[in-house]
Length: 162
Image 1 (cartoon, helix red, strand yellow):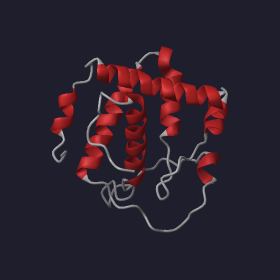
Image 2 (cartoon, one colour):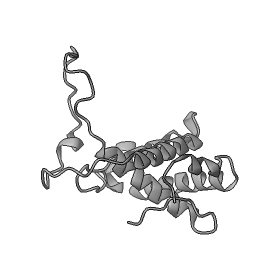
Image 3 (spheres, helix red, strand yellow):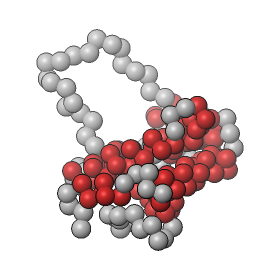
Image 4 (spheres, one colour):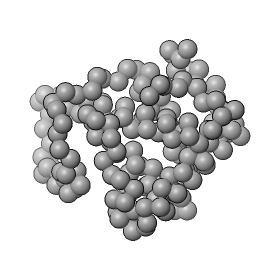
């Protein structure tokens, strides 16, 4: 997929928002998850029991994706700031949950770990409703971008945008 460095308000903005959400999910999955604490530090909490769904994926290879660049991480942070547009109350809680569950991707293949059916099962809604809520979230974010509630000059703060 060709990376877009700017949101073009003249074209299909919700589709562009969905693409940016997918790119942010792949960037988050590619971040290293080991060596995050000093070598002498140790936690005394018991290991967390993983969710059954997390154990279902099969490993395709041991090749990890390349580490994300600082620009990739900056774009990811920018996209996560968009999630605040979905509201902080309980009125859009289910929409936020659908977006967060859809952003779970396999770190190697980049494929979504949860299908629309599994997302619907987790939230006790139909798969069509789950997909509709995701599209609603993209439309809400797109409308906030169009109306200027998120300044587009924030894109210029990320260094290497062409």
